[in-house]
Length: 139
Image (cartoon, rainbow, N blue to C red; front, side, top):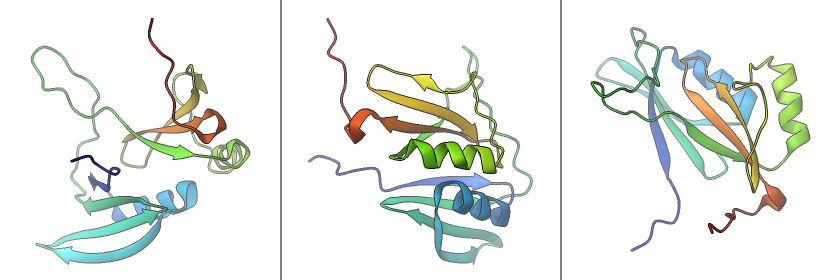
């Protein structure tokens, strides 16, 4: 069996409404379902085939990328693929997004920008050359 693609990412966020609004403005995610489970607000956001399932927990401690020999390794970031550099640059400017690591990062076959969402999750925004996922062959 092979996986077709990643179906969704499930995230706990500090503020559901702020997060829904931010993902709508920055990446075009629409709310497709919301509810309340065990007193916790939740929602499902969708943009294209990508889905985010978010659960509100106001007491959440900001995510940390720190990993050492004495702490478990966690997910450092997730990536969203875009196809329009100009539209992304306009979004960065209009939303006044801080692009981490000194700005645009060039890889052999793609360009990425790293930003933080309102809860502090790091997102890699990836633009593949010619919109084709490909990899440089190792020697």
